[in-house]
Amino acid sequence: MIPLSITLRQALERLVLPILIVAALGIILLGQADRGLTERVRMGLADILAPAYGLVVWPQEQARDLLGRMRDMGRIEAENQRLRAENANLRHWYDVAAALADENAALKANLHWMPDPAPSFVTGRVVRDTSGLYARSVLVAANVDAGIHKDEIVLDGSGLVGRVTEIGSRSVRVLLITDASSRIPVRLEVSHGAAIMAGDNSGTPRLIYYPQDNPPIEGERVVTNGEIDTMPPGLPVGQIHYVRPGQPVVIPFASLGHLDIVRVFDYGRSAVVPPDAPGRIPVRRPADSLPLPFPSPLGRG
Amino acid sequence: MTPDQAPEFQPGIQPRPSLWRRLDMLSRRGLPAALTGMAVLLLSAPFGLPGQAELLPGVVLSSVFFWSVFRPASMSSPIVFLLGILVDLLGFGPPGVMLLVVLLVHGVALSGRYGFSRAHILVLWIVFGGLSLAATALQWGLISALSLHLVPTVAFAFQWVLGVGVFPLLCVVFSTLGRSIANPDRA
Image (cartoon, rainbow over all chains, first blue to last red; front, side, top):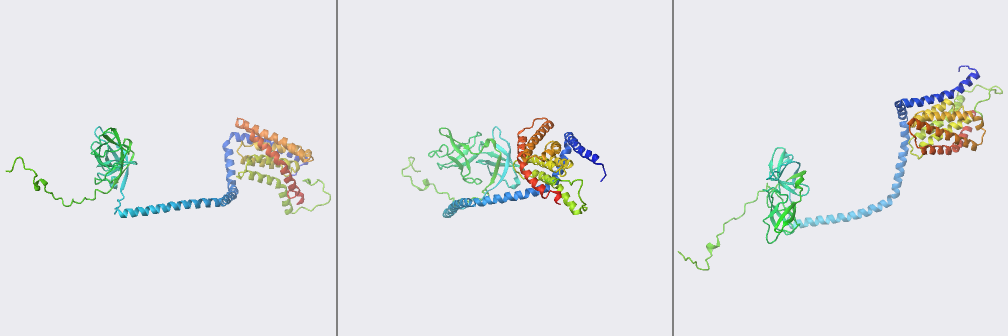
């Protein structure tokens, strides 16, 4: 140590604190002048201390975890009760479902039910409404290579949209059920009548050829009939509405005005070739065989 | 409290202290500052305790005040400076404010230490209360001036109350330490 006189050393010691206070004021000024420097120094210190802080945090997390687990263990009784009750409930529903499945299978077996083949479908986006004055059709951009054929059925989320009429390389044209040339055989669900739904370029296709002795009921559901090869029965089409007495129309379920995403279904029914009608033997007309009960006024010969 | 420094004139001849004894003395002498630094680091650590950030200035001011009064050799001005720097770097306020505050508290404690060290603990508590109130007010004023708007006073009041409340507890701890492991004369 440098030998200093006691008075000098005392004077220096007395000078230390004012110097440090001035230094503190300088640090305040420096911190105001260069904020980035403060941030850098602070971040450097934080980086150094981060592992230590991690060591501090780790046992806290462990303790909190342990505490939470103990609290869970405290609740385990109530939780167990709840799960037991829920399990019993689910067991009941499982039994119900199994019984229903068995019953369904038995009924189908009794009916000699032949299950429908699961339809394959291609989803596409309606890119353009090609409707004109005399036609109602849309263009669907879909992967044609995935297997879209003519006359396939197009449905949106809620009902029948139309049928594929033309096939391009990347898109298909769909004739809507409202088009004037569209004729769809339908079945009425409540009155069990069959009819033809004929488009007329308006939003609501007309219903024609319905049984006159069993007229459609206002509000009943209309589903497809399945009498044409490409269309399976039971697809939702719309519901009956009488615009005036004796003129029922179908309000389509599908939102034909603003179609967005549709699915093109291949029900594979066109591949089924219907068998030839057996024994189509022309019967002799009764007039040829039965003698007339009364003499001809013209006489014979 | 035993005096820190040996009297100038020792009766008799003493052997030169061995290396271990000198290390022991050094560690005992440095213990208050080390403990205060540890306290600063711990109170800045993410414990998530309520009032942790507000407690830090009170603990630092109590420690600086106590050791400056009773053993200035263990809490010299450079050590106070380093502690202040540490507090400022671990905080998020304008840099240098806490540093200036602890230096001023240290200076006041040093200048009045002959009266303070003889005073009763309650008197010392009152003195510390007034001093820390002034320090907190200075801190609030400096922060307000440096950030160019009046910061809310509630947090500073809370900080002051915590500091005043924690001072007697720390006094008990520090006295015990000062008589036992932080006493260089027992080396």
